[in-house]
Length: 459
Ligand SMILES: Cc1cc2nc3c(=O)[nH]c(=O)nc-3n(C[C@H](O)[C@H](O)[C@H](O)COP(=O)(O)OP(=O)(O)OC[C@H]3O[C@@H](n4cnc5c(N)ncnc54)[C@H](O)[C@@H]3O)c2cc1C
Image (tube, rainbow, N blue to C red; front, side):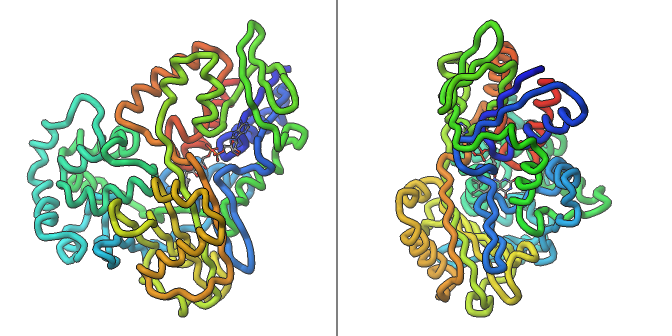
């Protein structure tokens, strides 16, 4: 019987355990132990359901284009629970000089597909609008200028659209998802589809317009679950043999010997044939350091922290927000917030009838500043910051705070090359897989795809 250890019970570790449970039920002889340091499973994924509000403590959905989270949800019997973003009301605002300015319709990240909507927008100056229009005519020049090596998101966006577009939407969009600094983030790792468009079309605008003209059906941008993403966790946990799961069991040592792997946890040392290492990146790195220092070096990355504050109001009219999904705050703005999502407008069924649900985010340096504060203080700061932007807010019925230190690893320039070398070294060790958001993508679908693929390769 093959013995397999999973270290870490976030979405990555659980997806691996679920896949192993499927193999076990098909008669493959395996014994699995999942060690989770905390008292609960799910890691960053957590749904708080209270007073009719469905509040996500971490991710609130996934990008519909990537099929792997949906496939898992359907397999787990959650098809009826799938709901989609209200794309007919999709509008995102950017905080500029203290006021919310709407991004033009038809933007795909920082690339417009509708130049008429762009022209009517009050977000960009005439100069930035001219830069967008000119980008189409510069297609040949841009294609010839594609660098042979990786570059930063900042260099890439500046080459196409200039500084204003980078500062007003490039930087806040990317720091919201990757918690990163656009001058450091690798464009090939975090914006691969746009890099491919540039290679083919030169102009990103022309490339996207051509792709959208060919698209036959429009899928809503985001998918989530009616009762919250916690349902995905609960269903996976229910499908995993309970004797496999060990909560409050921190893995604090890993060793290789001629027989396989030794895992030391808070309750002793056990021997395994294979290890799926699904802890946060900095923990995985510390565990690997004594085994292969070069691997640990390749895993050295900055990771940014996040603090999420959810506010549930029973009367939406008393907490008015503009129509749309929420707003972004460019770095260097006069606000501690990184973003805010108007959850009841982004997805249905998040609130009791007539209610409002806002999720405010602190990221990067401001998250680090508030991480150490008490919940009441964080709630007060978030409310004050929101009120400065949205106007006075009433006392919320519910406030929820979640601290997520080092939760978003930053994929810096050269990330793909470093990961290729890391993969090779890890393969060389034999019987070890690295899972989670430090390597091949941060979104839930990527993590689920990777974890399931690793299990198939390990058995
Ligand atoms: C604020 C925020 C919003 C996000 N929004 C979205 C979104 O809307 N859509 C989307 O697709 N993605 C989103 N993401 C990204 C996504 O949520 C994460 O990348 C993903 O949840 C990470 O899962 P994981 O299993 O890799 O890590 P984690 O969830 O961090 O799980 C790791 C687990 O390992 C455990 N652990 C730690 N140390 C040890 C140890 N020594 N031994 C044993 N166990 C240990 C931890 O307790 C934890 O349970 C968001 C991320 C953040 C931070």
